[in-house]
Length: 245
Image (cartoon, rainbow, N blue to C red; front, side):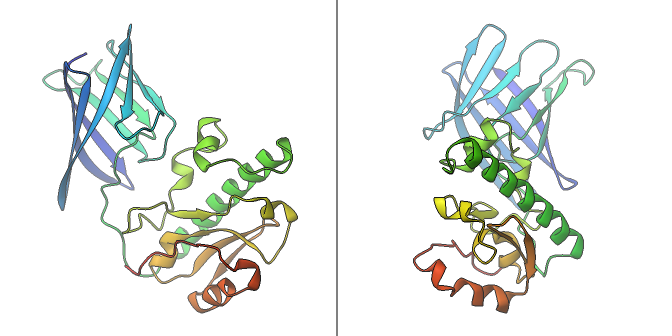
C-alpha cells in the first residue's frame, strides 16, 4: 500500500496534522506538524491482504491495523494519543475517512503549566480508580501476581491507551503520566501504601491524585505528598518524580 496519507490528530480539542508516508521498502514515515515543533518518526509495516500492520522500529511488537479499502479504520493496543482521522491525500473526504483510536503517535500538545483545575483533578481521580481496579482484578485471577506492565492490560482490553493519559498531562519529560506500583505489595489492601499517582499533576505543583492499595483515592497537596514518600514502606522505591513545569 505505498502512498501518502494525511492524518488529523485530535487531542483535548487541539488538532495536529500528521503525514503518513508508506514506502515501497516496508517503512512508513510519520511527520507531525505540531504548533511549536516538527517531529518525525519512522516505523515499519507489513501487508496481508487488505490488512496493514504497522510496527514501531524499536522492538515493540504491538501493532496498528488499518483496512485499505474505501474506508480506513483500525484499532491499536499500545499507549499514545487519543484519536486520529485519516484521509488519502488528493482524494475526496467522503468514503476515504476513518478513525484510529489510541494510535501510537507522540502527544503534540505543549505540556501545560499552572496548578491542575478541579475538573482535571476529578478526571484524574477516576482514571486512577480504573487503573487500580484493572490491576487488582488481574491479581485476583493470577494468584496475586501483578501484570508485567500496564501494556498487558491494554492488550487484553481491560484498559485503553486513553486511560493511561492524565488530563493534567502530558509530562515534559516524555515519560508516562501515571506512576503505578506493580509488585506483590499492592495486594495487601494497605490503606497507607501508595499504589499509583499522577506524575503530570505533580509536575504542575499539585494537588496530586493518589491511589492507595485499598483502592481509595486521595488528592494531596505537594507538601503532604512529599511527606508520604518518606514512609519507611516506600524505602528504595523509585517514584520517577518529574521536574516541575
